[in-house]
Image (cartoon, rainbow, N blue to C red):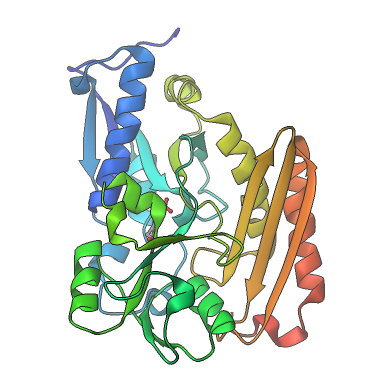
Length: 314
Ligand SMILES: NCc1[nH]cc(CCC(=O)O)c1CC(=O)O
């Protein structure tokens, strides 16, 4: 390191949302940096930033206007210099960052699968005819409606505890949470089973933590390079290029997953109508270095297959 490292007197400020999962992720980034540079905990300061998306719990996310809802205030703090890095769930991140910010550091990816959460039913396939399931994710709702048109879908938001209470109260018999979040919070047991990607393809970048920085901050750039996970970067390059070409966000019914197989990359993607009446899927295999091009090609292929009115909900 040619740059001075942070010290307890001049700590590196890590910006995050205040949810339990977001805090865990910020502390994980701190742990990685402490280990990489042999620094004490006091060389870092975790700064909690309130974001619009966390304060509006009574409305469906898509009503309050999706993109950047959980990130805007954090990115403003980063640009203003109030924080030095920002930690995000990559699943929630738009594919384009504001001028002056860069998002190219990813920690090693967690479990990418969705978890099936239910006090009564062991697996997705065991849901009885007409069962009520709770989810506010446009992707999960569309995938379920497609697979099981008999199910009744209700909106479900709030933290894990709130959702578990709703299940106990009988508001729904099951819901879905990313296994990554449950694993990180040490509560994977609330999921009765993990849903394999061929049954429910996860959201692009699900399970990956990203660290955003100012483009002109060379010290932070060098520090983040030390904790970046290359394979996760290769997978997200393909998935996020797919998403970018579709012009989607985490609140649109788009799913995508890249898996590395030796020196090859296997990419799967799908787009759905929100009511599940239609799904268009594709998959491709190619060289890892071609991941971004594969993602864009796959997106264009899906778009060319989609009927004219497929995106009329946008
Ligand atoms: N959209 C909310 C969100 N963003 C990231 C995660 C989970 C952790 C991850 O995927 O990295 C979740 C909650 C969920 O889908 O259960």
